[in-house]
Image (cartoon, rainbow, N blue to C red; front, side):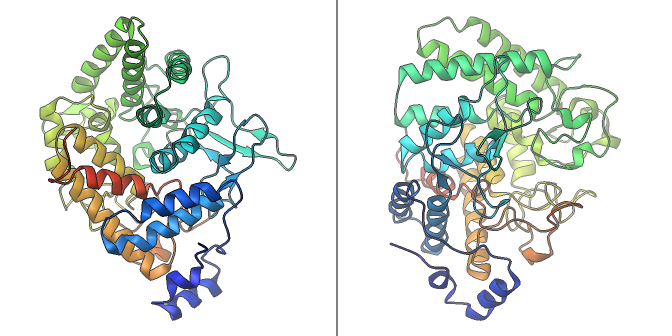
Length: 441
């Protein structure tokens, strides 16, 4: 089945033509030979029951996935998927975009998701560093920045792959990679007073992925514990402990590190008065605190206490004056003075709504997860009907996408036909799992 852009946009032909003439939408093409099986599997996934209003955007996303898979290149042993034809012409591999793609495709075509994980881990350096963003020169040689880390979210997609396709040998490879990456974080990103940090708090490196986020407007004088990096390393410890136990190895060392870091997060990064998590250097300084969405990460990874998690969910994630915007979640609290319509400083990213919903579900708040997911999927479907594309990020207030800002330099507006930040299949799947009538596991 070949889906043309005209099929999607027939309901609003005048607007579609205007967008096409303006060059805002990427030309819609056929799937690659390597991407055809993935496209077909995702089309079957799109046909599963959900809300009818979501179907067209899911079919369109399946087609985008089909265009984004390429033959093996350089050290990749398997076909690789880029983060979407609308981002720098495609063929950019990695970052946390890749984790979102694996979570999006693992149910439809598990072997594809596993192959992307193998491709990513194949780039691991001897010191445990795993390349974050891989690009290719004209000769097809892979290149990356060898000292710029990225959030180690790959472990979540590893769990998802193992759940669908159990493989003890591959689990052992993943454990080895996680242990080595832990060593890299401990050697290179440990904060003097506990916890971990990303280089962004010292310089404009953007290894956290939150380019020019509000947390970096006022940097600390030196390394200190970050509200995102510290929970991310907690997640690595947790995976190392669970995977060690599953393989019959002693998990004690990892469990001990996990417990100590969890306590650090619960005490040093938490403000009880505002019921939210912050970077250590502002957590206990009301004059410097702002409502950045990264404060949800301790809930997402399970490092928060049950009481802390419930307060974050009820007082912040479901608060329409903060993160529960018409298109949730806003990346900066709507009531915060630093909220603006620029990337990571206010607009909504579907991938982050997905992580927020996972955190809610982890703490037995399926009701909250379902609200977040349904509201975001509804808003995305409405915008898809209007513009005929999937955007890198969205106006949290449902405004005109073309008026959103990206960065002061380079591309000024959000990318279109973007896969990496739109794990819509994963969002729908979690929405189903959080239904009151869903079977309990």
